[in-house]
Image 1 (tube, rainbow, N blue to C red):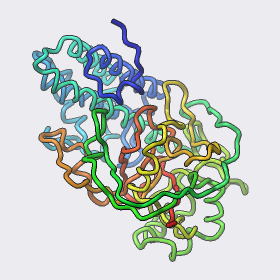
Image 2 (image 1 turned 30 degrees about the horizontal axis):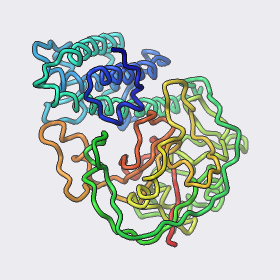
Image 3 (image 1 turned 90 degrees about the vertical axis):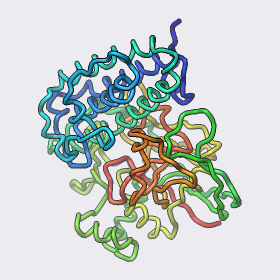
Image 4 (image 1 turned 45 degrees about the vertical axis):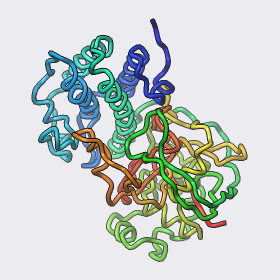
Length: 432
């Protein structure tokens, strides 16, 4: 039987059917290859900062995940491609063993990119055989690990694009990852406010569809009545913040944020540049004239919070954001199977909260912490999310580099408050 269900649909249902899962496996693994196809071998080996990773390392690491957690555990007689890859391409799983230091991944000129491609082919062939022939006794445990591995790879697909943009932004020739795909020529809709009732609400994942462990358990929260802006903050509005000396007025900034502004010399969002009186922004299609109608992007939590204070508003909590998004379709400007739209685009005026999904991840004021009743899974897989629940802030909604079908209302992304290379933006909140 031939199954043609795309991963963007089928993966959300956590398929256990072998044919459906094989179709998803091929789709996701193929998308990684398509995303890295425009890159030269030189592009794939460089690490532009300690928080980023070379594209070659990403390609190998997501392959290591399947080899380690599926084939090495459940596939009888599987032979590893190279025994030292367990050390080179482990990310942070202490239970698996030692690993190459993260800040030094750019030193790995060997194995070459061709060997990583061979590694992917070796593991892909073994995985396809395993999906087709795995004994029924191991399938109930192995199938969820395969689904987790595919969602994990989709996370790294987004990271590949984030890291390549940061890498290319270090080059004064402003190289393009791909040809510019123009956003629709439209103005951002007027900013309006949408009221939401307070009360006892439930947030968090429930049901049989896929979710990461940090999205549950589902639990009750108490909300006061609140309102959300009808769309994200735009680049034009951010220019007003700059013009009012927003980056020079400490009264808007958290103490750590102000210390970061002074230490780093921030004057605008990451990748912005003022050239001959005009603002430009580096994108995956090279440096472009700043789209004033598009959501502001590549701002840190510190900047998002400062802007909200300057505007006399605040950032939403993640519970407020999720309750507002819970009944909305998960549709927007995501990275599909074809060409990317290489930057956020202006929204439409549909009379509902605009761009809750896609374009830019939206900072919340919520610290990344465990939900009541959260328990990490036993073993190495339990290190996936729980060990990072400190000193980070939650973002919601997905961005233009997030794979289509990967986001949902309960999805909790998280970054440290000073980080800007992710596609982070701002939606304002307020009391009613």
